Image (cartoon, rainbow, N blue to C red):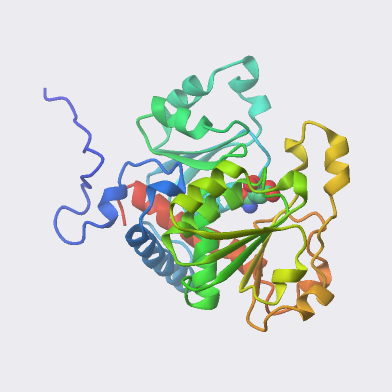
Length: 330
Ligand code: NCD
């Protein structure tokens, strides 16, 4: 009897001839935005647009019928976990949800490598969120099925960055030449760590506005500078608000502070109100990965420039595209 040899990472069994661009993602992990080229992004967004169209027209279809996703969340999540669940189910697949690790063998002291090697016996792809930086890469080292990083501590959140970029393109029609201002907790916010890195593929200007103790980590600034990114740091929004095309607001990441007094000293430093919006361009968009805890006043929600709820919806289409791609069906 010949033993089964799985296709190598670059061979999709579903795309033997024809367009092979998606095939390069087959069986691959998604760990960091640094793995993507501009060409990859265009391809992913093309698939995401098709997913949007299909969801609008028929809701659920059978592209991933028979496939199983394990959603392994060691940290709280509403949007990321439920959008991955929805993405898988809209593609006809199913989900093993492990949101409460305290009820799983993790609470018995099982290691991450053992947990992922267990889950891959039952699932075709594993989405993981974990409080430690590098945890998704560690999981990928031990798993042979694709691992998708849904946030590794203060490290990265690559699928969020892709959906953020997809939102910018959907809202403003382009990325090049934009001024993007990131505001809030730039030290601990993994979404801005990933998005700023992803933006090095484009010709943009990045402004960082934060309290002193929450500045963008110097190693990220250096990494981006070496790739030619134009960056500037501020401690108030005033000098940049009127020149900003995308205002990316973040939550102060309370759970990451070693000293809660430090958190108390910076929480509520920045609040986007209708008065702040009065100073902004008519076409500026406000984004936020959510959850918000007071950084954007609810009175801003009705402003057509408030894009954060539309941004959340983008997450579904981008994650559908990524799942289809890593499972060799896009
Ligand atoms: C973000 C996260 O988990 O990093 N949330 C999300 O995935 N939409 C941002 C946050 O928690 O502040």
